[in-house]
Amino acid sequence: MYSDDDFIQLSALQHFIFCPRQCALSYIEQVWEENLFTAEGGIMHDRAHAEGFETRDGVRIERGMPLRSERLGLNGKADVVEFHKSGGTWQPFPVEYKHGKPKENNCDKVQLCAQALCLEEMLKNKIENGAIFYGKTRHRLEVVFNDALRQETEDVAQRVHEFIRAGLTPKPVYSKKCESCSLVDACKPKALEQAASVMRYLKEAIKE
Image (cartoon, rainbow, N blue to C red; front, side, top):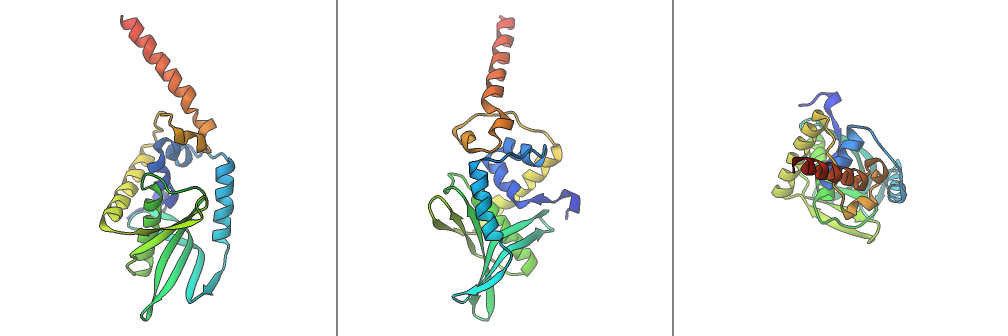
């Protein structure tokens, strides 16, 4: 169990897998900068979070639903939770909205699975799957919450708690994904990596 001060945002799990330095800048140093991608993503989330409840084609739709897990120390909001009728009960189906396209790693799936784990704890109801809607492809990717993804999500949640508690920001490592990051100017991955390379060169030269 975690105290309220120790709770972390669900989105921190996605940031941590995508780039630990990005996670540290956002959740340890509290740095935030806007770019085209975050602005467009923000518009998508604002639309998804628009307060309201509706029923469409027999599906109950809840937007901007607050989520919390006492066990994992997580909180945040679900973009959309659909409730599908199954027998005599309504089965929750979380839907996360992303601006881009499916990632090569599991960062988006872990974030969605964390939402499902919160819902399970809150509603006492097992959730088998959910979906991620990608704005670039205009397509829903269905995600199955199998044992492997659940375990990965819990492991990442624990690692992020330890990471934020340590309060240390990793050094930058430049890669192609840096160009789409809203924190690239604050992070300065190329400049700091080059400076580190120069320092290593000077140290080696002195040894010789």
